[in-house]
Length: 570
Image (cartoon, rainbow, N blue to C red; front, side, top):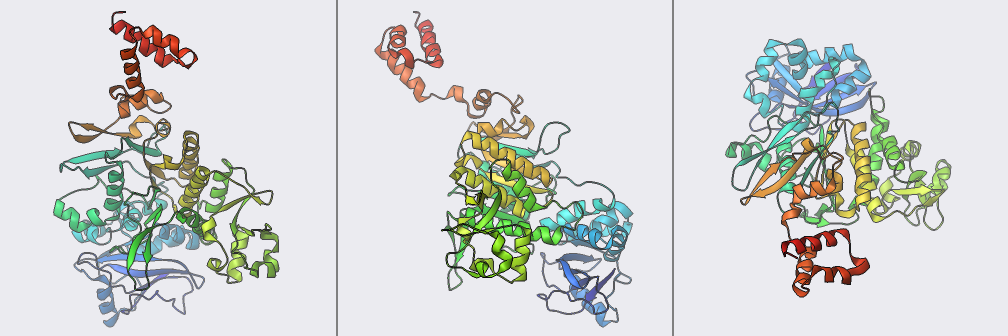
Protein backbone atom coordinates (compact mmCIF):
# COMPACT_ATOMS: atom_id res chain seq x y z
CA UNK A 1 0.00 0.00 0.00
CA UNK A 2 1.24 3.49 -0.88
CA UNK A 3 1.48 6.56 1.34
CA UNK A 4 0.91 9.91 -0.37
CA UNK A 5 1.09 13.56 0.74
CA UNK A 6 -1.09 16.11 -1.07
CA UNK A 7 0.35 19.60 -1.32
CA UNK A 8 -2.00 22.34 -0.11
CA UNK A 9 -2.92 24.76 2.65
CA UNK A 10 -6.55 23.88 3.47
CA UNK A 11 -6.19 22.45 6.97
CA UNK A 12 -9.90 21.63 7.23
CA UNK A 13 -9.97 19.31 4.22
CA UNK A 14 -9.96 15.52 4.48
CA UNK A 15 -7.13 14.04 2.38
CA UNK A 16 -8.50 12.86 -0.95
CA UNK A 17 -8.03 9.45 -2.55
CA UNK A 18 -5.86 9.19 -5.63
CA UNK A 19 -7.83 8.03 -8.71
CA UNK A 20 -5.22 5.33 -9.34
CA UNK A 21 -5.18 3.94 -5.78
CA UNK A 22 -8.31 2.52 -4.13
CA UNK A 23 -6.40 1.45 -1.01
CA UNK A 24 -4.01 4.13 0.21
CA UNK A 25 -2.91 6.15 3.23
CA UNK A 26 -3.52 9.74 2.19
CA UNK A 27 -2.00 12.73 4.03
CA UNK A 28 -2.55 16.48 3.76
CA UNK A 29 -1.64 19.85 5.31
CA UNK A 30 -2.63 20.97 8.80
CA UNK A 31 -1.54 24.16 10.59
CA UNK A 32 -1.97 22.90 14.18
CA UNK A 33 0.70 24.33 16.51
CA UNK A 34 2.11 22.57 19.59
CA UNK A 35 3.94 25.25 21.56
CA UNK A 36 5.93 26.41 18.54
CA UNK A 37 6.33 23.00 16.89
CA UNK A 38 3.98 21.98 14.04
CA UNK A 39 3.97 18.30 13.07
CA UNK A 40 0.28 17.49 12.47
CA UNK A 41 -0.93 16.08 9.16
CA UNK A 42 -4.50 15.15 8.31
CA UNK A 43 -4.63 11.42 7.56
CA UNK A 44 -7.19 9.09 5.98
CA UNK A 45 -6.91 5.36 5.40
CA UNK A 46 -8.83 4.42 2.24
CA UNK A 47 -9.83 0.79 1.69
CA UNK A 48 -11.48 -0.25 -1.59
CA UNK A 49 -12.16 3.37 -2.45
CA UNK A 50 -13.84 4.35 0.83
CA UNK A 51 -12.53 6.03 3.97
CA UNK A 52 -12.19 3.41 6.68
CA UNK A 53 -10.23 5.32 9.32
CA UNK A 54 -9.56 9.04 9.72
CA UNK A 55 -6.99 10.35 12.18
CA UNK A 56 -4.03 12.68 12.61
CA UNK A 57 -0.39 11.80 11.93
CA UNK A 58 2.33 13.66 13.82
CA UNK A 59 5.43 13.78 11.63
CA UNK A 60 8.65 15.27 13.05
CA UNK A 61 11.48 16.08 10.63
CA UNK A 62 15.02 16.48 11.94
CA UNK A 63 16.11 20.15 12.22
CA UNK A 64 12.63 21.39 11.31
CA UNK A 65 9.75 22.80 13.37
CA UNK A 66 7.03 23.04 10.68
CA UNK A 67 6.60 19.67 8.95
CA UNK A 68 3.51 20.49 6.79
CA UNK A 69 5.22 23.58 5.37
CA UNK A 70 8.39 21.57 4.74
CA UNK A 71 6.44 18.92 2.81
CA UNK A 72 4.81 21.63 0.67
CA UNK A 73 8.27 23.03 -0.11
CA UNK A 74 9.52 19.57 -1.09
CA UNK A 75 6.56 19.19 -3.47
CA UNK A 76 7.36 22.56 -5.04
CA UNK A 77 10.96 21.37 -5.48
CA UNK A 78 9.90 18.29 -7.43
CA UNK A 79 8.98 15.63 -4.85
CA UNK A 80 6.02 13.58 -6.12
CA UNK A 81 4.48 13.24 -2.63
CA UNK A 82 4.94 9.48 -2.31
CA UNK A 83 6.66 8.20 0.83
CA UNK A 84 9.34 7.69 1.95
CA UNK A 85 10.44 11.34 2.05
CA UNK A 86 13.79 11.44 0.24
CA UNK A 87 17.04 12.30 2.05
CA UNK A 88 15.43 13.28 5.37
CA UNK A 89 15.44 11.79 8.86
CA UNK A 90 11.91 11.80 10.23
CA UNK A 91 9.62 9.86 12.58
CA UNK A 92 5.85 9.80 12.99
CA UNK A 93 3.22 8.96 15.60
CA UNK A 94 -0.49 8.38 14.82
CA UNK A 95 -3.06 10.12 17.01
CA UNK A 96 -4.96 6.87 17.60
CA UNK A 97 -3.70 3.38 18.45
CA UNK A 98 -6.55 1.87 16.40
CA UNK A 99 -4.60 2.91 13.30
CA UNK A 100 -2.44 -0.19 13.75
CA UNK A 101 -5.40 -2.55 14.16
CA UNK A 102 -7.03 -1.01 11.10
CA UNK A 103 -3.92 -1.54 9.00
CA UNK A 104 -3.51 -5.17 10.04
CA UNK A 105 -7.21 -5.94 9.50
CA UNK A 106 -7.39 -4.38 6.04
CA UNK A 107 -4.02 -5.06 4.40
CA UNK A 108 -2.38 -7.78 6.52
CA UNK A 109 0.52 -7.61 8.95
CA UNK A 110 3.34 -7.79 6.38
CA UNK A 111 1.98 -4.93 4.28
CA UNK A 112 1.22 -3.00 7.49
CA UNK A 113 4.90 -3.28 8.48
CA UNK A 114 5.81 -1.82 5.09
CA UNK A 115 3.53 1.18 5.75
CA UNK A 116 5.15 1.73 9.16
CA UNK A 117 8.54 1.77 7.44
CA UNK A 118 7.32 4.33 4.90
CA UNK A 119 6.00 6.73 7.55
CA UNK A 120 8.88 5.78 9.91
CA UNK A 121 6.61 5.00 12.84
CA UNK A 122 8.50 6.02 15.99
CA UNK A 123 7.42 3.16 18.25
CA UNK A 124 8.04 0.52 15.58
CA UNK A 125 11.46 1.88 14.59
CA UNK A 126 12.63 2.29 18.18
CA UNK A 127 11.39 -0.94 19.75
CA UNK A 128 11.51 -3.46 16.89
CA UNK A 129 13.94 -2.21 14.23
CA UNK A 130 16.26 -0.41 16.73
CA UNK A 131 16.79 2.33 14.12
CA UNK A 132 19.49 4.62 15.55
CA UNK A 133 18.55 7.65 13.44
CA UNK A 134 14.98 7.36 14.69
CA UNK A 135 16.10 6.86 18.30
CA UNK A 136 18.25 10.01 18.07
CA UNK A 137 15.30 12.08 16.82
CA UNK A 138 12.94 10.59 19.43
CA UNK A 139 15.31 11.88 22.11
CA UNK A 140 14.88 15.50 20.96
CA UNK A 141 12.72 17.81 23.11
CA UNK A 142 10.52 18.61 20.10
CA UNK A 143 9.37 14.97 20.01
CA UNK A 144 7.77 15.16 23.47
CA UNK A 145 6.52 18.72 22.84
CA UNK A 146 4.55 17.90 19.69
CA UNK A 147 4.16 14.23 18.64
CA UNK A 148 3.67 13.11 22.26
CA UNK A 149 1.68 16.11 23.46
CA UNK A 150 -1.73 14.42 23.49
CA UNK A 151 -2.92 11.27 25.21
CA UNK A 152 -3.96 9.27 22.15
CA UNK A 153 -0.57 9.70 20.49
CA UNK A 154 1.26 8.77 23.71
CA UNK A 155 -0.73 5.54 23.88
CA UNK A 156 -0.07 4.78 20.20
CA UNK A 157 3.67 5.37 20.61
CA UNK A 158 3.99 3.31 23.78
CA UNK A 159 1.86 0.29 22.85
CA UNK A 160 1.05 0.26 19.12
CA UNK A 161 4.26 -1.49 18.08
CA UNK A 162 3.46 -4.44 20.37
CA UNK A 163 0.91 -5.71 17.83
CA UNK A 164 3.83 -6.43 15.50
CA UNK A 165 5.89 -8.20 18.16
CA UNK A 166 3.22 -10.56 19.53
CA UNK A 167 3.10 -8.65 22.81
CA UNK A 168 -0.08 -7.80 24.71
CA UNK A 169 -0.54 -4.23 25.91
CA UNK A 170 -2.02 -3.55 29.33
CA UNK A 171 -2.36 -0.57 31.64
CA UNK A 172 0.77 -0.23 33.76
CA UNK A 173 0.96 0.84 37.40
CA UNK A 174 1.68 4.55 37.75
CA UNK A 175 2.25 7.20 40.40
CA UNK A 176 0.22 10.42 40.40
CA UNK A 177 2.01 13.34 42.06
CA UNK A 178 -0.62 15.70 43.49
CA UNK A 179 0.22 19.10 44.95
CA UNK A 180 -1.19 19.49 48.48
CA UNK A 181 -2.52 22.78 49.84
CA UNK A 182 0.75 23.31 51.73
CA UNK A 183 2.65 23.00 48.44
CA UNK A 184 4.17 19.61 49.21
CA UNK A 185 3.91 16.72 46.76
CA UNK A 186 1.71 13.74 47.70
CA UNK A 187 2.57 10.71 45.53
CA UNK A 188 -0.31 8.27 45.04
CA UNK A 189 0.67 4.89 43.61
CA UNK A 190 -2.04 3.25 41.55
CA UNK A 191 -1.53 -0.49 41.21
CA UNK A 192 -3.39 -2.39 38.49
CA UNK A 193 -1.33 -5.54 38.07
CA UNK A 194 -1.21 -8.68 40.20
CA UNK A 195 -0.60 -12.34 39.48
CA UNK A 196 -3.44 -13.41 41.77
CA UNK A 197 -5.68 -10.82 43.45
CA UNK A 198 -8.01 -8.61 41.34
CA UNK A 199 -6.28 -5.24 40.96
CA UNK A 200 -8.68 -3.94 38.28
CA UNK A 201 -10.24 -1.34 40.61
CA UNK A 202 -8.50 1.16 42.88
CA UNK A 203 -10.44 2.95 45.62
CA UNK A 204 -9.96 6.36 47.24
CA UNK A 205 -11.76 6.43 50.59
CA UNK A 206 -11.96 8.94 53.42
CA UNK A 207 -14.21 11.49 55.08
CA UNK A 208 -15.97 14.32 53.21
CA UNK A 209 -13.94 17.29 51.99
CA UNK A 210 -10.59 15.59 52.45
CA UNK A 211 -9.42 15.67 48.83
CA UNK A 212 -10.60 12.54 47.01
CA UNK A 213 -12.38 14.45 44.24
CA UNK A 214 -9.43 16.84 44.04
CA UNK A 215 -7.21 13.85 43.28
CA UNK A 216 -9.54 12.72 40.49
CA UNK A 217 -9.68 16.24 39.06
CA UNK A 218 -5.88 16.44 39.13
CA UNK A 219 -5.61 13.07 37.39
CA UNK A 220 -7.92 14.21 34.59
CA UNK A 221 -6.17 17.55 34.03
CA UNK A 222 -2.64 16.14 34.24
CA UNK A 223 -3.35 13.26 31.87
CA UNK A 224 -5.16 15.43 29.32
CA UNK A 225 -2.71 18.32 29.61
CA UNK A 226 -5.35 20.97 30.34
CA UNK A 227 -5.68 23.64 33.07
CA UNK A 228 -3.20 22.70 35.85
CA UNK A 229 -1.85 19.94 33.61
CA UNK A 230 -0.99 22.14 30.63
CA UNK A 231 2.65 22.42 29.59
CA UNK A 232 2.67 26.10 30.55
CA UNK A 233 1.32 25.41 34.07
CA UNK A 234 3.62 22.43 34.65
CA UNK A 235 6.69 24.36 33.48
CA UNK A 236 5.73 27.31 35.68
CA UNK A 237 5.38 25.08 38.76
CA UNK A 238 8.30 22.83 37.73
CA UNK A 239 6.01 19.90 38.44
CA UNK A 240 6.18 16.32 37.14
CA UNK A 241 2.60 15.00 37.40
CA UNK A 242 3.45 11.29 36.90
CA UNK A 243 6.42 8.99 37.27
CA UNK A 244 5.46 8.09 33.68
CA UNK A 245 2.33 9.09 31.75
CA UNK A 246 -0.38 6.42 32.15
CA UNK A 247 -0.65 4.29 29.00
CA UNK A 248 -4.43 4.50 28.80
CA UNK A 249 -6.31 4.99 25.55
CA UNK A 250 -9.28 6.92 26.94
CA UNK A 251 -10.46 8.39 30.23
CA UNK A 252 -14.15 8.15 31.11
CA UNK A 253 -15.32 10.12 34.14
CA UNK A 254 -18.67 9.63 35.86
CA UNK A 255 -19.98 11.86 38.63
CA UNK A 256 -23.63 12.29 39.52
CA UNK A 257 -23.02 14.77 42.33
CA UNK A 258 -24.61 18.20 41.78
CA UNK A 259 -21.56 19.84 43.38
CA UNK A 260 -18.74 18.37 41.25
CA UNK A 261 -16.54 20.59 39.08
CA UNK A 262 -14.92 18.16 36.67
CA UNK A 263 -14.03 19.00 33.08
CA UNK A 264 -17.24 18.61 31.04
CA UNK A 265 -15.74 18.30 27.56
CA UNK A 266 -12.71 19.30 25.52
CA UNK A 267 -14.48 21.56 23.02
CA UNK A 268 -12.86 24.74 24.37
CA UNK A 269 -9.43 23.28 25.09
CA UNK A 270 -6.39 23.71 22.86
CA UNK A 271 -6.28 19.96 22.24
CA UNK A 272 -6.79 18.53 18.77
CA UNK A 273 -8.01 15.12 19.99
CA UNK A 274 -11.42 15.89 21.51
CA UNK A 275 -12.38 12.22 22.00
CA UNK A 276 -9.70 11.18 24.51
CA UNK A 277 -12.02 12.07 27.40
CA UNK A 278 -15.73 11.64 28.10
CA UNK A 279 -17.69 13.04 31.04
CA UNK A 280 -21.03 11.69 32.28
CA UNK A 281 -22.97 13.60 34.92
CA UNK A 282 -25.81 16.06 35.42
CA UNK A 283 -23.94 19.10 34.04
CA UNK A 284 -23.78 20.17 30.41
CA UNK A 285 -22.76 23.16 28.30
CA UNK A 286 -25.74 25.28 27.21
CA UNK A 287 -25.31 27.76 24.37
CA UNK A 288 -27.76 30.61 23.72
CA UNK A 289 -28.68 32.14 20.35
CA UNK A 290 -25.80 34.63 20.61
CA UNK A 291 -23.24 31.87 21.09
CA UNK A 292 -22.70 32.56 24.78
CA UNK A 293 -22.12 29.46 26.87
CA UNK A 294 -22.97 28.54 30.44
CA UNK A 295 -23.05 25.38 32.52
CA UNK A 296 -26.51 23.98 33.20
CA UNK A 297 -27.82 20.98 35.13
CA UNK A 298 -30.24 18.42 33.69
CA UNK A 299 -31.54 15.38 35.56
CA UNK A 300 -32.39 13.78 32.19
CA UNK A 301 -28.79 13.64 30.98
CA UNK A 302 -28.04 10.07 32.19
CA UNK A 303 -31.10 8.80 30.29
CA UNK A 304 -30.45 10.69 27.05
CA UNK A 305 -26.76 9.78 27.23
CA UNK A 306 -27.73 6.10 27.44
CA UNK A 307 -29.57 6.35 24.09
CA UNK A 308 -26.58 8.04 22.45
CA UNK A 309 -24.22 5.45 23.94
CA UNK A 310 -26.24 2.49 22.63
CA UNK A 311 -26.30 4.04 19.17
CA UNK A 312 -22.54 4.62 19.33
CA UNK A 313 -22.01 1.00 20.43
CA UNK A 314 -23.98 -0.33 17.47
CA UNK A 315 -22.26 1.95 14.95
CA UNK A 316 -18.82 1.07 16.37
CA UNK A 317 -19.66 -2.63 16.06
CA UNK A 318 -20.76 -2.21 12.45
CA UNK A 319 -17.68 -0.19 11.49
CA UNK A 320 -14.93 -1.92 13.47
CA UNK A 321 -16.28 -5.46 13.82
CA UNK A 322 -13.75 -6.66 11.27
CA UNK A 323 -10.79 -5.59 13.42
CA UNK A 324 -8.87 -8.42 15.11
CA UNK A 325 -10.01 -9.15 18.67
CA UNK A 326 -12.84 -6.59 18.49
CA UNK A 327 -15.17 -6.87 21.49
CA UNK A 328 -18.73 -6.26 20.35
CA UNK A 329 -20.08 -3.45 22.49
CA UNK A 330 -23.82 -3.97 22.13
CA UNK A 331 -23.49 -7.68 22.94
CA UNK A 332 -21.46 -6.71 26.01
CA UNK A 333 -24.18 -4.31 27.18
CA UNK A 334 -26.86 -6.99 26.87
CA UNK A 335 -24.85 -9.80 28.49
CA UNK A 336 -23.73 -7.64 31.42
CA UNK A 337 -27.16 -6.15 32.17
CA UNK A 338 -29.05 -9.42 31.67
CA UNK A 339 -27.06 -10.86 34.55
CA UNK A 340 -28.66 -8.24 36.80
CA UNK A 341 -32.08 -7.54 35.25
CA UNK A 342 -34.58 -9.94 33.67
CA UNK A 343 -35.42 -8.48 30.24
CA UNK A 344 -35.69 -9.71 26.65
CA UNK A 345 -34.32 -6.75 24.72
CA UNK A 346 -33.66 -3.00 24.75
CA UNK A 347 -35.92 -0.48 23.03
CA UNK A 348 -36.31 3.27 22.53
CA UNK A 349 -39.55 5.17 23.08
CA UNK A 350 -40.96 6.64 19.85
CA UNK A 351 -42.11 10.26 19.86
CA UNK A 352 -45.90 10.49 20.06
CA UNK A 353 -47.43 11.02 16.64
CA UNK A 354 -44.43 9.78 14.67
CA UNK A 355 -45.94 7.35 12.14
CA UNK A 356 -43.13 6.70 9.65
CA UNK A 357 -42.11 3.40 11.27
CA UNK A 358 -45.70 2.13 10.89
CA UNK A 359 -45.62 2.98 7.19
CA UNK A 360 -42.37 1.13 6.40
CA UNK A 361 -42.73 -2.69 6.24
CA UNK A 362 -39.07 -3.18 7.26
CA UNK A 363 -39.88 -1.96 10.78
CA UNK A 364 -43.22 -3.71 11.38
CA UNK A 365 -41.63 -6.56 13.34
CA UNK A 366 -39.72 -4.21 15.64
CA UNK A 367 -42.57 -2.05 16.98
CA UNK A 368 -44.27 -2.84 20.29
CA UNK A 369 -46.62 -1.13 22.73
CA UNK A 370 -50.05 0.46 22.60
CA UNK A 371 -50.27 3.75 24.51
CA UNK A 372 -46.53 4.24 24.25
CA UNK A 373 -44.75 2.92 21.18
CA UNK A 374 -41.26 1.42 21.39
CA UNK A 375 -38.73 0.48 18.72
CA UNK A 376 -36.69 -2.64 19.40
CA UNK A 377 -32.99 -1.87 18.97
CA UNK A 378 -30.34 -4.13 17.45
CA UNK A 379 -27.79 -4.01 14.64
CA UNK A 380 -30.38 -5.00 12.00
CA UNK A 381 -32.69 -2.11 12.96
CA UNK A 382 -29.81 0.38 12.92
CA UNK A 383 -28.81 -0.76 9.42
CA UNK A 384 -32.42 -0.28 8.23
CA UNK A 385 -32.53 3.19 9.80
CA UNK A 386 -29.35 4.11 7.92
CA UNK A 387 -30.73 2.68 4.66
CA UNK A 388 -33.91 4.75 4.99
CA UNK A 389 -31.84 7.81 6.02
CA UNK A 390 -33.94 8.35 9.16
CA UNK A 391 -32.70 10.87 11.73
CA UNK A 392 -33.41 9.30 15.13
CA UNK A 393 -33.47 12.74 16.77
CA UNK A 394 -36.75 13.31 14.92
CA UNK A 395 -38.44 10.13 16.13
CA UNK A 396 -36.93 8.94 19.45
CA UNK A 397 -37.60 10.35 22.93
CA UNK A 398 -34.01 10.55 24.17
CA UNK A 399 -35.12 11.71 27.63
CA UNK A 400 -36.83 8.35 28.23
CA UNK A 401 -33.48 6.60 28.00
CA UNK A 402 -32.87 2.95 27.23
CA UNK A 403 -36.07 1.00 27.94
CA UNK A 404 -35.92 -2.64 29.03
CA UNK A 405 -38.63 -4.87 27.56
CA UNK A 406 -39.94 -8.17 28.96
CA UNK A 407 -42.83 -10.05 27.31
CA UNK A 408 -43.34 -7.03 25.01
CA UNK A 409 -43.87 -4.68 27.97
CA UNK A 410 -41.58 -2.04 29.45
CA UNK A 411 -40.45 -3.24 32.88
CA UNK A 412 -40.29 -1.02 35.94
CA UNK A 413 -36.96 -0.85 37.75
CA UNK A 414 -35.89 1.26 40.72
CA UNK A 415 -34.17 4.61 40.23
CA UNK A 416 -30.96 3.09 41.62
CA UNK A 417 -31.08 0.17 39.19
CA UNK A 418 -31.86 2.52 36.34
CA UNK A 419 -28.89 4.74 37.15
CA UNK A 420 -26.38 1.93 37.36
CA UNK A 421 -27.77 0.49 34.10
CA UNK A 422 -27.21 3.88 32.50
CA UNK A 423 -23.65 3.96 33.88
CA UNK A 424 -22.90 0.53 32.38
CA UNK A 425 -24.42 1.52 29.02
CA UNK A 426 -22.60 4.85 28.92
CA UNK A 427 -19.25 3.35 29.86
CA UNK A 428 -19.48 0.60 27.23
CA UNK A 429 -20.58 3.11 24.59
CA UNK A 430 -17.42 5.15 25.07
CA UNK A 431 -14.89 2.58 26.24
CA UNK A 432 -11.93 1.34 24.23
CA UNK A 433 -9.31 -1.26 25.00
CA UNK A 434 -7.12 -0.08 27.91
CA UNK A 435 -9.45 2.70 29.06
CA UNK A 436 -9.51 4.16 32.58
CA UNK A 437 -12.97 4.58 34.11
CA UNK A 438 -13.10 7.13 36.95
CA UNK A 439 -16.24 7.27 39.12
CA UNK A 440 -16.83 9.79 41.90
CA UNK A 441 -19.05 8.47 44.71
CA UNK A 442 -20.92 5.68 42.88
CA UNK A 443 -22.85 4.93 46.06
CA UNK A 444 -24.82 8.22 45.97
CA UNK A 445 -27.95 6.58 44.54
CA UNK A 446 -27.30 2.94 45.44
CA UNK A 447 -28.16 0.98 48.58
CA UNK A 448 -25.44 -1.47 49.82
CA UNK A 449 -26.78 -4.48 47.90
CA UNK A 450 -26.84 -2.49 44.65
CA UNK A 451 -23.32 -1.22 45.38
CA UNK A 452 -22.02 -4.79 45.29
CA UNK A 453 -24.07 -5.59 42.19
CA UNK A 454 -22.74 -2.47 40.49
CA UNK A 455 -19.13 -3.46 41.25
CA UNK A 456 -19.80 -6.92 39.81
CA UNK A 457 -21.17 -5.40 36.58
CA UNK A 458 -18.30 -2.90 36.37
CA UNK A 459 -15.75 -5.70 36.70
CA UNK A 460 -17.36 -7.55 33.78
CA UNK A 461 -17.09 -4.46 31.58
CA UNK A 462 -13.48 -3.81 32.61
CA UNK A 463 -12.51 -7.40 31.87
CA UNK A 464 -14.15 -7.34 28.43
CA UNK A 465 -12.13 -4.28 27.41
CA UNK A 466 -8.90 -4.90 29.41
CA UNK A 467 -9.59 -1.65 31.24
CA UNK A 468 -9.21 -0.37 34.81
CA UNK A 469 -11.16 1.87 37.20
CA UNK A 470 -10.58 4.32 40.04
CA UNK A 471 -13.46 5.00 42.44
CA UNK A 472 -13.70 7.76 45.06
CA UNK A 473 -16.10 6.53 47.72
CA UNK A 474 -17.25 6.35 51.34
CA UNK A 475 -18.60 2.85 50.83
CA UNK A 476 -17.25 0.10 53.06
CA UNK A 477 -19.09 -2.49 50.94
CA UNK A 478 -17.17 -1.37 47.85
CA UNK A 479 -13.85 -1.16 49.70
CA UNK A 480 -14.29 -4.73 50.93
CA UNK A 481 -14.20 -5.87 47.28
CA UNK A 482 -10.76 -4.31 46.67
CA UNK A 483 -7.31 -5.59 47.79
CA UNK A 484 -5.45 -3.44 50.33
CA UNK A 485 -2.70 -2.37 47.91
CA UNK A 486 -5.42 -0.77 45.77
CA UNK A 487 -7.08 1.05 48.70
CA UNK A 488 -5.91 4.63 49.23
CA UNK A 489 -7.06 5.97 52.61
CA UNK A 490 -7.22 9.76 53.02
CA UNK A 491 -6.58 10.78 56.63
CA UNK A 492 -5.72 13.99 58.46
CA UNK A 493 -2.60 14.15 60.64
CA UNK A 494 -1.76 17.40 62.41
CA UNK A 495 -4.01 19.32 60.05
CA UNK A 496 -2.45 17.81 56.91
CA UNK A 497 -4.00 15.24 54.59
CA UNK A 498 -1.94 12.13 53.97
CA UNK A 499 -2.67 9.06 51.86
CA UNK A 500 -2.09 5.74 53.61
CA UNK A 501 -2.70 2.07 52.89
CA UNK A 502 -4.43 -0.40 55.23
CA UNK A 503 -1.95 -2.56 57.20
CA UNK A 504 -4.32 -5.52 56.79
CA UNK A 505 -5.97 -7.21 53.79
CA UNK A 506 -9.25 -5.48 52.92
CA UNK A 507 -10.29 -7.89 50.15
CA UNK A 508 -13.12 -9.89 51.72
CA UNK A 509 -12.16 -8.38 55.09
CA UNK A 510 -14.22 -7.39 58.12
CA UNK A 511 -16.23 -4.24 57.41
CA UNK A 512 -16.09 -3.03 61.02
CA UNK A 513 -12.30 -3.27 60.98
CA UNK A 514 -12.16 -1.37 57.68
CA UNK A 515 -14.52 1.27 59.08
CA UNK A 516 -12.49 1.72 62.25
CA UNK A 517 -9.26 2.14 60.28
CA UNK A 518 -10.65 4.47 57.62
CA UNK A 519 -13.02 6.64 59.63
CA UNK A 520 -11.65 6.19 63.17
CA UNK A 521 -15.01 5.09 64.58
CA UNK A 522 -13.48 4.25 67.95
CA UNK A 523 -12.32 7.83 68.50
CA UNK A 524 -15.63 9.47 67.59
CA UNK A 525 -18.42 9.93 70.12
CA UNK A 526 -21.67 8.61 68.66
CA UNK A 527 -25.21 9.76 69.59
CA UNK A 528 -25.59 6.26 71.01
CA UNK A 529 -22.65 6.85 73.41
CA UNK A 530 -24.12 10.20 74.47
CA UNK A 531 -27.46 8.56 75.23
CA UNK A 532 -25.78 5.92 77.44
CA UNK A 533 -23.96 8.65 79.37
CA UNK A 534 -27.20 10.59 79.87
CA UNK A 535 -28.98 7.51 81.26
CA UNK A 536 -26.09 6.70 83.59
CA UNK A 537 -26.36 10.23 84.97
CA UNK A 538 -30.04 9.60 85.77
CA UNK A 539 -29.80 6.07 87.20
CA UNK A 540 -27.27 5.16 89.88
CA UNK A 541 -27.16 1.49 88.95
CA UNK A 542 -26.77 0.42 85.27
CA UNK A 543 -28.87 -2.64 86.11
CA UNK A 544 -31.87 -0.33 86.42
CA UNK A 545 -31.36 0.79 82.82
CA UNK A 546 -30.99 -2.82 81.69
CA UNK A 547 -34.22 -3.78 83.41
CA UNK A 548 -36.16 -0.84 81.93
CA UNK A 549 -34.95 -1.54 78.38
CA UNK A 550 -36.32 -5.07 78.43
CA UNK A 551 -36.74 -6.37 74.85
CA UNK A 552 -35.20 -3.19 73.40
CA UNK A 553 -31.83 -4.10 74.89
CA UNK A 554 -29.22 -5.24 72.37
CA UNK A 555 -25.77 -6.75 72.83
CA UNK A 556 -23.83 -3.52 72.33
CA UNK A 557 -25.98 -1.67 74.89
CA UNK A 558 -25.51 -4.50 77.38
CA UNK A 559 -21.72 -4.51 76.96
CA UNK A 560 -21.53 -0.71 77.35
CA UNK A 561 -23.68 -0.77 80.48
CA UNK A 562 -21.82 -3.69 82.07
CA UNK A 563 -18.48 -2.02 81.36
CA UNK A 564 -19.73 1.16 83.00
CA UNK A 565 -20.41 -0.82 86.19
CA UNK A 566 -16.76 -1.87 86.29
CA UNK A 567 -15.52 1.68 85.71
CA UNK A 568 -17.79 2.93 88.51
CA UNK A 569 -16.67 0.18 90.85
CA UNK A 570 -20.12 -1.41 91.04
